[in-house]
Length: 308
Image 1 (tube, helix red, strand yellow):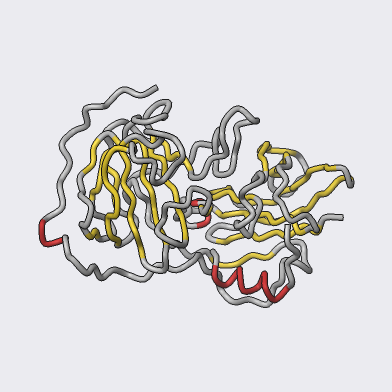
Image 2 (cartoon, helix red, strand yellow; image 1 turned 180 degrees about the horizontal axis):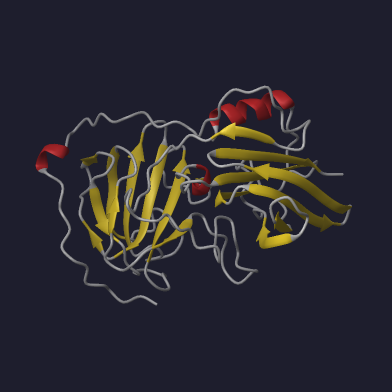
């Protein structure tokens, strides 16, 4: 991947922070007054971090304050649980295509809320292959356009409550969770795209760097800085130590992003980690790499590892 300079990466830190149809309960619909020909909605910006004197290319890790870009699309009173078996960028050990979004666990028929103000640019069955190379991949699909060329996608829905051209405010009910398309079981596929008109299947961002933290939790991102222009999938082990010890309390077996994720500044990210002391380790042809880092509640731990 491309070399990061301290200045460029510092700017990134400041700018970035099967298929049966369900029968959901009746959900409220948007009022006609919410539709407008020229929508006005709150500016969306890239995840941001508080300016602090820390450069992750010259230290083991940086801790920056977390700022949420989007609200929980399942609503403020629902848990935001991301399925760890198939996170963003995962191929599920080579068994599936790389995941361009995250699967948020939820019951069939649960309401889906707009996580920020936006314009509905697509609402219907995913048969037109506008947003994916495969027919009916997302099943019932909604796409919202936010400011700054940011788009959010909601897939596998059982019910759609908006129409193209509607404007929505943060917290409006737009749909119901389902398992249409290629979904296995009921969940919400949530995806973020940037740039253009939102139709580029390969221009996605990791939603875990845009969604809110669970109370008392922290976020971790890892960037591998080397000479290779392409992302190379690597298997990582992340170990959480028991407080005050070097005894392993929990292990995460994860993978970095594969090829075709070169536009992502980071190589791995995970939201809502328990605070504590963690060890990151992996090996490749050049040897063993490891790093000891801290995760704190309400903070984003940013790690850059220089490859040999």
